[in-house]
Structure formats: C-alpha cells, structure tokens
Image 1 (cartoon, rainbow, N blue to C red):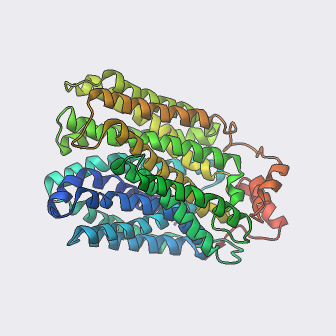
Image 2: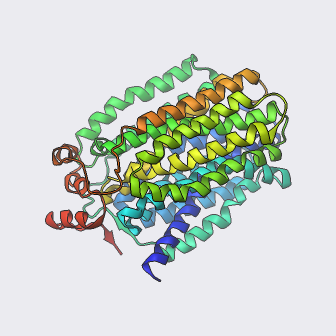
Image 3: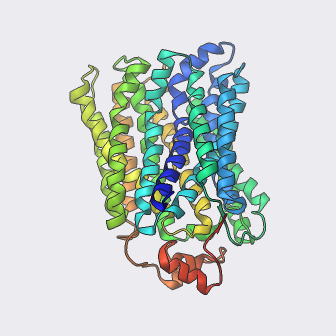
Length: 504
C-alpha cells in the first residue's frame, strides 16, 4: 500500500467513525415521538433523558478520554471506542424499557467520547503539515453533515420502518470501521507518558462539564430560574477554580493548561463554541418550523433540510485546500458570516405559507456554503499548533467546545421558540433564526483573532510565548515552535533527544 493510498484509507476509517458518533447526536430527535409511543407509561420528562443523557455524557467525557488516549495509545482507544459504541447501538435497538434505553445511551456517549478525539489524532500524522487543513476539513465536514443530516435520515428510517432502526444503522458502519482500523491504523501515543493523568482532576473535569451541560439541557424543561438549574450551573462553575488549581499543581493534569495558552487553540475553540451554538440551534429551529408552521411530516422535514448538508460536503474539500494555502482565518470568518446571512434569510423570507424553492432553498444553500467554509476549518485550526503527543487532547478540547456550544444553542433556542406542542408562533421562529445568525457572527468576529496564514508558511509564534506555554506541559516549547509538523518539528525533537511519536 502506498503512503498516499494509506492516508486516504485512514481518512475513510476515521470519517466512518465520526459520522456515526455525530449522527447519533441529532438523529434521535426526530424519532422522539415514535420512541414516546413505545413507552407510554414513561413521563415526557423521564423520556427526555434519551436525548439529554447522550449530550451530557458526551460533553463531560471528551477531554478525559482524549487525555487517556494520548497515553495508552490512540489506535487501541479508537478500536475500543468503536466496539463500545457499536455494541451499545445494537442494545439500544432492543431496549425493553425507557430506563434501559437511557442507560445504553450513556454507554453510547462513552464510546463516542473515545472515538472523536482519536479520529483526528490518528489522521493528522498521516498527512504533511501543508495538507492537514484539507484532511481535517473533510473529516469535519463528515461530522457536520452527520449532525445536520441526522433529521433527514431519521425521518426516512422512522417513516419506512421503526425507531429502533436508527440505532441498527450503526452496526455495519461501526463493524466496517473497526475491521479496517485493525489492519490499517498505526499505533501512536505520547513518547514520554509519565504518570497517569490525575484521576481526581479527571473527576473534577467531568463533573464540572457534566453539571454545566445538565443545567443547560434541563433549563428547557425546568426553566432558567428553577432552583435545580441554578444548582447545576452554580455547582459546575464552582468546580472550575478547583479544576484549574488542581491542573496547575500536578505533573500529569487532567486539563493541560499549556494548551489553552496557545493562541490558535484558545481562539479556535471560542469560535467553535459560538458557531456550534448557532449550527445546532438552527437544525432544531428548522425541524420545529417545518413541522409546526408548514405542517411537514418528519420525512418531508428531513428531505427539506438535506440540501444544506450536501452543499457543506461539497464545499469542505476546496475550503480545506484554500485554508492550507491562505490560512484558516481567510475561510472561517467569511464562512461564518455567510452562514449568518443564510440564517437571516429564513427570518426575512420564511412565512406561514410553504414556498420551498423561493423562501427556503436559498437559505439552505447559504448556510451549507458557510458551514463548509467554517466549521470543518475550525477543527483543523484548533489542533494546528498542538504538539503531536497531544493530538488527542487538543482534538478533545475542540470537540468539547462544539458539544457545549450545541447544548447552549439548543437551550437558548427552545427558550425562544418553545418546545414541540407549545410553539410560540412565526415571530418566535424569526427571533430564533436571528439568534443563530448572531451566534455565527460572533464566531466570525472571534476568528479574526487568528493569525493570518496560521497553517501555511513558517511559524510566527515567538520563543518567549512558547516558553510561557511550556508550563505545565514540559515538551510544549519546542513542539509549538516547530508547528507540530514537518522537518522543523523533527529537528526540534532531535535536539531535545526525543522522538515525535511512538508507533508500532
């Protein structure tokens, strides 16, 4: 197998896994009414955990899973995550009760939290630095298409068969990715793993993120002023200083603060959080509008949304190549602005009378183009200057930002337009789309803080900044200056007497 064919096969394997994990973040939403009919004795609040449990556990476990994968091996973690997710999906399809289904959704989230960070960590070493933005953009596009296309596929499956099949579709995908991964993927891990990541810090990190996600998710049911929401949000916020102190005082912290001092990491993750809030809120807003205002069936709603994800998939590859040449800022900022324009189109044109071609399709095309130019490129930008030994952790940070953005976006959107069955009216949807446009514009403004041509050309980060970022991450200095790729990295690591990665 040639080096070129191998790298594209690795992209295929990781894309299959990412598609599966992100698909299940949204495909269940449209099947929720059918699931509710199967468990009529379970309250709506209780059954909502079929959706909530996955999102909360996914967000809480991403960074711990990425941190552990960097240490124990990314291939090993990836394959274990695939098996866990695939087995949990099969069990979800046979769940005899709502409580069992909720528990299995948590198991699914555990598998997804292991899969997503390791996807990028396995992909990046296969491509030269000057082509990494293209590769990660394609992987990110798969994730975006899976999330946006979840309602479409879910509508088709529920209309043709049963809600249980939305879980069974994961089996052939997961088994194919696992089988190919065993033969093709190369093992890689931190060459100097040192002590196991701080267990108490991992617990603090998972608890803080989980409580914040819980408060945001349940605010749609309980209300933002409810005491339970305030306790969850306040508890999560109160744990953050303890997590920060613990991470700064341990040799092997759960959250490596040095990564957050890298400009591209901090800026890209902030922009990702804002854009994800708009992206996931818009998906939910679209589904609610099409069903409540235009009276579309789940199948019709899914098909109506489909052009956006298709355009995203078509745009992502060329956008990645342009980002390789001109840097991510040149694509992310205008892309997020175009996405905002597409959201605003719906607010200005979509009315109570269905007019798909004139009033809906242009907005879908604009948001598809904008998403393809921005969200996948943010994924590559977030890990562009991360040392190879921390690819898993860096990818996990970006995935956590995306997931928290999704939770925030949907919580705010529901507060604006209402839940299914209690929709506030057309003006509420207009306000919802303007909210998603505002979130996308905020992401565009944040992306302007990225350095021009950050993924192309020689490194621009100063050695003083690299030295500052090296604490508490010992090898950060040389790796940042080397830009995590290419001959410069090899020279820096050779001078330090360390290999780039351990492979078998």
